[in-house]
Amino acid sequence: MKILLVMPDAQMHKIRLGPLVRSMREMPLSICTLASLTPMYPDIDLRLVDGSVENVPLDYDADLVGISIITGCANRAYAIADHFRKRKIPVVLGGVHVTLLPGEAMQHADSIVIGRAEQTWPQLIEDFRAGSLKDIYLEHELTGDMLYSVPPPRRDLHKRSRYMIPDSVQATRGCKKACDFCTVPAVWPKFLKRPVEDVIQDVQLTKGKYIAFNDVSIAEDIDYAKELFRAMIPLGKRWGGLATINIMKDPELLSLMKASGCVYLLFGFESNDRPTLTSMGKGFNLSMAYDEIMHVMRGLRISVQGCFVFGFDHDTREVFANTVERVNELGIDIPRFSLYTPYPGSLLFKRLLKENRILSFNWDDYDTMHVVIQPSQMTPEELYQGFKWAYREAFKIRHIRKRMKGLTCNSIINFFGNLTYKIFVRRLFNEQKYALPYSTHDPGGAPDDTFYRDRFLEN
Image (cartoon, rainbow, N blue to C red; front, side, top):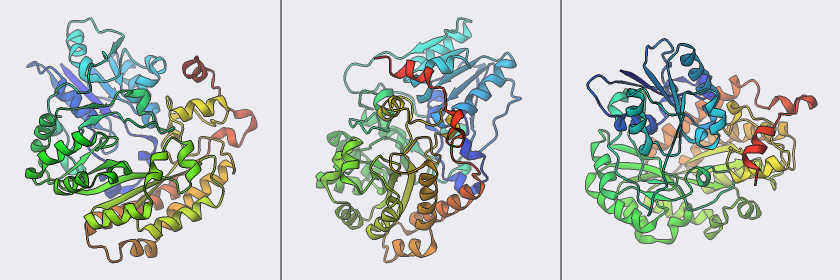
């Protein structure tokens, strides 16, 4: 019995970004975990495909195809699913996008998984073997705040050489915050933690020196994070992940984080504007000045990736130059910019849907690199051109040199990070011919939002 598990490539991956940029992608943990959850009968043959680093084998003679979907790759996933179904091969769809839009996904699948697959995937395989595959598999709500134990991901089914950091680990699921553009509260409304001993076992099984935690916020539960970091200290690993600036409130946590091997953190700074941070549900960013955060991180010798978003309702045309100037003043090691994107299920999606400000429901555009909303204080064209200018300006050689001047920590990580983004920016904007939705150029081309209004605005 041949099972093909696929993580599709998003539209952006069709752009020729080169091997260095593509290799920065993490090994997809979702399908590695599905592989570990698959009951391994003697006749089962598993094949995993990450579409961002290899071609999906459309001629593969699978008995069952499973596809994990995020919004930005939904169209590609549906095309792959339709192809295999035309060949009479059953297809199962799951992932964040399927959980948020199950009705849409059902049009392209024989079965869908809603919610966490850890509960349902083993039973799905048993049902398929018995010839009784159900249309829908739905997770059961967990009691308490601990995730159940799962086997270590099957990383051995991917080629490690395709990834700069092939080992990713997840300790927690969900987030206690409610940022308006984030789908996490809709997909995982409850913050859950894996047993620390399970996470440590997972880390011990990784082969490389570096690992990436793909938690939404690695230290969302301070006490849990301290326990985890203490247990990691003897392992001698180096790691990076995402965090909120709330970690700055606890010196012991920061000390343990560094002792456990933390070498870089990604912070969602999002904006320099106080009203913007408050309105988007990220008022907690106001608890400490960004300058002070950078000073603390420098003292700990932890590199910082800082994310900023363009397109908030308070943003004017001056936001682009002001943000780049601020990034350089702060000395953020690797800046990242994105466009305000209303992912389905997010509070932002519901608000802009009510305000008739969503310009596109083409999921290929939902990669934070395309304008899909009507901005409040500029045109869509001005938003895109300003975004493009900011990226190009921030990654000019003179600004990279300025950010790295006097750097005493993680110089290799920062150098390759900046180099990768410079290549990414140049190739992306050279090849991305059209980054505005059709409806902004054709008054008659406004999208039909009836389906999404029925799905998300019914209450």
